[in-house]
Amino acid sequence: MKKLLFCTSNFKTGVGGISSYAFDFINAFKAEFNITIIASGNIENNTYKVYQCNYLDFSIANANRLLDIINKEQPDIIINSAFALLSLVTPYINNTIKIITVSHFVNGRYAWFAGLNGNYVDSIISLSSYGKEYIQKKFSIKDEQKIKVVFNFMPETPPNYKEKEKKQTLKIVYPGGCSYAKSAEVVCKSLKLLLKTTLDFEFYWIGNTKIAGGNNKFIQIKDIKDCLPKDKRIKQIGRVERSVSKKILSEANIFLLPSRGEGFPISLIEAMRFGCIPIISNAKHGSLDAITNGINGLIVRQSDADSIVNQISNIIKKHSDYYSIYENSYYYYKNNLTESIWKNKLSQIIQLPLNHSPRISIFNKYRYKKDKLYIQYLMNKYWIYDRCIQLYHFLYFRYLKYFI
Image (cartoon, rainbow, N blue to C red; front, side, top):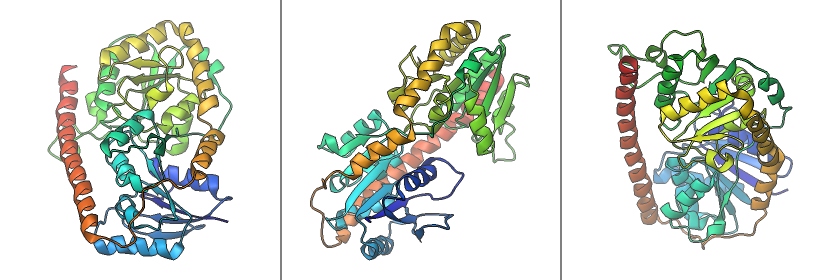
């Protein structure tokens, strides 16, 4: 049995995202490979051999420790799932080892961790066509066949959209928390505008609700709830248990996620597998790969709250005109986003022949430091960008509180 080394930045149950991807991947291939794991942070495991290694410790000592683990395990295949340090040491790994990296976002740090030293890896998995395009340009990947697009998946379950068609009060679900990438402030504005109407609906806001400045005791507006009126149509604002979240998503008539950026959102798949009416934005992100406007979902202009309100109003007022979208969203899931389809695509990538530039046999600390400085430069730029986003959210949510 071949040995597979799975490197992930997070390996803890119940936190979603990258950690969920790790568990999904390992469960899918545990019968085919002898799997060992390298993970960062808190680790929950009783089954697999796990090494703990800080994926953001770029010291030469930690880099050599990671290389020592790889040399000790001698895997046939390495999967890099957002493990930044592995991207830095990839040029010094044995040429006979196949390396596959996974980009969990359309751009930004998770794409950097997948694309850095991309010519020394055999395949790069992107969750969307836009993510593939970004990595190709950012890291000058000339071989277009090196980057493969593989969407996320959810296990199959019987759909319930026929029951949803009969509902008089429609459920609107937004699962993006207070994330700028998910356009939280645009959704908040849309909700305030909807609440000014007499339309009959139920709104579920799932995820974090603390806004920028919320930790400061002198700041009065700390939470999304502080920006919204009390209205019985708001049924949920805040985090819920995973089982509750799944139930809410399964019952969604309208799935609202007008993101600025995505990999390929699991929450969208969760909603589509039961049949729903997705509303997404026209920003370049993974959801656009799945949704065809007017067929299996609706696409609105990015950051346009009025457009969101108009679409939702039309759905509520003319519900029967949108019945076909329920069915089409379910069948898109059925034909593209099931576990068997996902595993088959990954299996094909894993079985491909080696396809990387010749790696360096001896660790070159000067080259390593150069790559380290580059990734730190990118991450510092991201930190500044994130601070600007926090300031924008700080101001915008206060504008929503007092002027919308």
